[in-house]
Structure formats: structure tokens, C-alpha cells
Length: 306
Ligand SMILES: NC(=O)c1ccc[n+]([C@@H]2O[C@H](COP(=O)([O-])OP(=O)(O)OC[C@H]3O[C@@H](n4cnc5c(N)ncnc54)[C@H](O)[C@@H]3O)[C@@H](O)[C@H]2O)c1
Image (cartoon, rainbow, N blue to C red; front, top):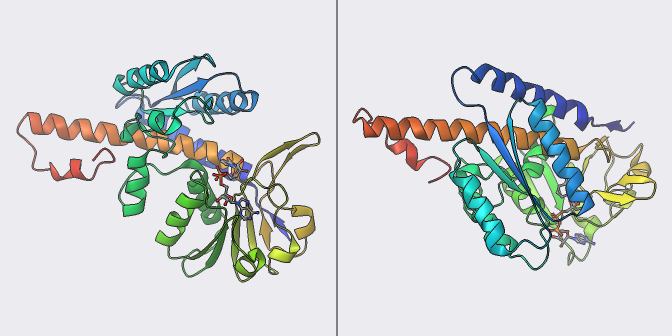
């Protein structure tokens, strides 16, 4: 029998933990604040940003939203990012993707200071992940790992097939899984025999953007299947996996919606809390160094901003 992994329930628990920590920290220091930056009027992006802002409110954090017109220039978007970067009340900055095609998205993402990079997508954050140093990790792949942990799926020595090597999901996920002791096989659009890569795996994670790519021919009995794909169809949301066809074959599987999607938002809340905490730690160190009290200056070398 195949069990559905309830990402909504796991995400709710994580968000409640974050909210409890925010409430507990309120007296002692600043409330974490998250700035969402939306450029243009793409309806899907507007829905995602609205969901993120609802989560910010429910976590008891401050909501600093900026909406720029679809005609905003590179310099105008950069100026908004710089202003948020300089604002001490803003713990994290999220630039909603995709941006209008004429903007240089990489340059704008890399303007976000690494300590406020709650999406974990800057070049600096990718470097910290690659080096295994402390930093903010991309929300969707860290949500996948959190989901597997919450389900008690052992990663150490497990064989995981990651299908899709995109910058948002597959690539950072591969690094996270390797660090957890998994053996990882990565498949992509040029993989000659996809089933040969996925069938031996204990866990198959699919993040390709190809609707219904994975079916029974790709999955061994009992495997855990994580579907990261999201496709809007007239009959609702669906994923990269033909999940109905895997019923009775997969051991556990994430539904779409209600699997990885809610985890992405939960991990954004976790990252914002971490960003606020690490920023406060760094300020403590700076204050101690300024007052000549600190023998702790090495800590700043370990901060996500280093
Ligand atoms: N659930 C969430 O919160 C969430 C968040 C981010 C992305 N997504 C979804 O995840 C999917 C992937 O996103 P991305 O930004 O990493 O995509 P991407 O376009 O950057 O990368 C897609 C990857 O899939 C591979 N691929 C394409 N066709 C393939 C095929 N036939 N066989 C094997 N591999 C193939 C490509 O080689 C590439 O490595 C999308 O459907 C996106 O909507 C979901």
C-alpha cells in the first residue's frame, strides 16, 4: 500500500514552532522581518507572494512588501534591494522569480547580502553550501530534506535519484543529500536511460518541470517518491509524477498539491528566523569587539556573511 506524505501537516508544525520562537524572542530583541519584492503582475507570482506574506503574518514576523511595476528598470529594482539591505528591521529579502526577461536576474539576486538571502540563491550562499559552511539554504530542497526527516526516512547510506539538475532545486538538493551521507545519482534532460537511474533508488526526487514524467516504469516497489513539480491545469495542480499510476508500487509519495509546496513556505519562515538570529549574533560580536571585550572575533569568520 502506498502512503501519502502529508506536507501540509509537517509544514504547519514547523511554522507553529517558528511562530512560538518568534513570540518568545519578542521581548529580548527585534522581531524578524521579511521583505518580499514582486516585479510585475504575473498571476502565479502574485499568488506565491500572497501565500508567503500570509505566512509571515501568521509567524508574527514583520512584513515589508514591495511591488514594482512590470516596467521597472534594473536600476530601480537594484535601488529597492539596496534600501532593504540597509534596513536593520529587514532580516530577509526575497526577490520573487521569475523576473521580467529584460532584467538581469542573477545580478539582482547577487545584490542581496548573503546574511539576508532567505531564498539561498545568491552566488555567495551557493558557495557556502558547496563548502558545507553555515549559511541559508534554498527553501525547496531544504524542505524536501526536512520532509524526509519528518517521515523518518533514513538518508545515510540511502540511494537517492535526483531527477532534474536545476539551480533552484536539483543542484542544491544534491549537495544537501551528499552531506547527509546519501549516495546520489543525478539525471537530467540528456540522461539516456532515465529508468536505469531511478529504478535502483530507495528515494526518487523529481524536479524537472516536465508534467507526468515519472511513472511505474521508473520506480521500484517500496521506494519513496518526492514530487517537486507544480503544473497548473484546468482540473487543478499536478506534478512531475503520474502519482495515480504509482499507487501500490511506491512505499510513500508526496501529493501535488499538499506535498513539497507547503514545505517551501515553512522553510522560508525558518530561514527568516535564522537570518534574524545570525544578524543579532553578528551585532553582538561587533559590539563586543568595539568595546574591547571580545576574544570571539573568529565567530564573524563563520557567519553567513563571511
Ligand atoms: N514545490 C515548490 O515549491 C517548487 C519550488 C521550485 C520549483 N518547483 C518546480 O520544480 C520543477 C523544477 O524547477 P527548477 O527551477 O529546478 O527547473 P529548471 O528548469 O531549472 O531545471 C529543470 C531540470 O530538469 C531537467 N529535465 C528536463 N527534462 C527532463 C527529462 N525529460 N528527463 C530528465 N530531466 C529533465 C533539466 O535537465 C534540468 O536539469 C518545476 O516544475 C518547478 O515548478 C516547485
